[in-house]
Image (cartoon, rainbow, N blue to C red; front, side, top):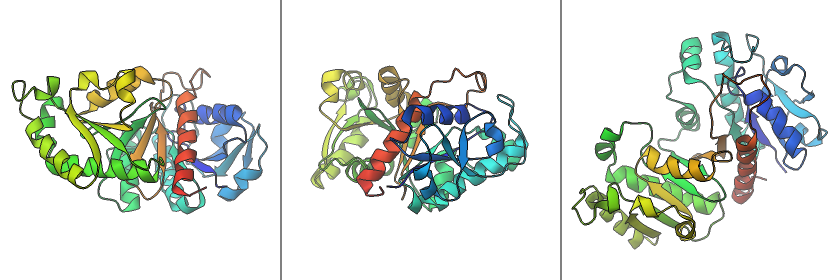
Length: 319
């Protein structure tokens, strides 16, 4: 059995306290270890380890920590640019040991702090992980037991979506999702639902013609043997009965995907990066500087992310 590697993320956010809470909740039922500076975990019961395998022999009430020295202290809610380089190094270190773990789970980072403190040149975690892995294109999935959604376009203005949504992008998104459902989720014959862009999926062109570039992509992929439905009206895709008819939903833009999953699974949604040569999950929340150190942060999403990393690792044969 291989443990999950959990990166510390921004050390003055809620990531470290959530790691401690997750260990208390999971014990040894799901082995994981934290890569962090032990100085930042004052008051927590921890055990320093030297290799990922060492995490398997630690008592259930103790958090295994693979030490990584940071330049600064960690005062909850008070970002220190001196720690930015350490945050980035921890992510790279986790990737370097990907063959020794079942998966990587990343605690939240703050991009502005990393940019100000270390000149971080990436829009976020996902792009940095893709660069470390040497992968040109990855896909973001938000997942819960009730629903998996994949936005084809992500952090762009709604007005930019029609031009950004090219047939090449849509095809790549569907192919990466289809492959991941087989390899990482153990679904032998994935069923994928694809949303339209416009109300009523355009209703034959009377409410928009963007679906005209979606339909040929779906037809071509169906000819390759994929089970695809759509383009579908997004307003009828996410009720309970509709969700039984597919394994993942491809959406055309950010809110079309994230509103339903955050409505259905706000506390236990998981961010999954598809298309990497290793498993990567993360909780679906940020650093929450405003509540850091107060002991009130909810660990549900991190626990779900750790569990999903372990399950996906097992499906991929990494356990």
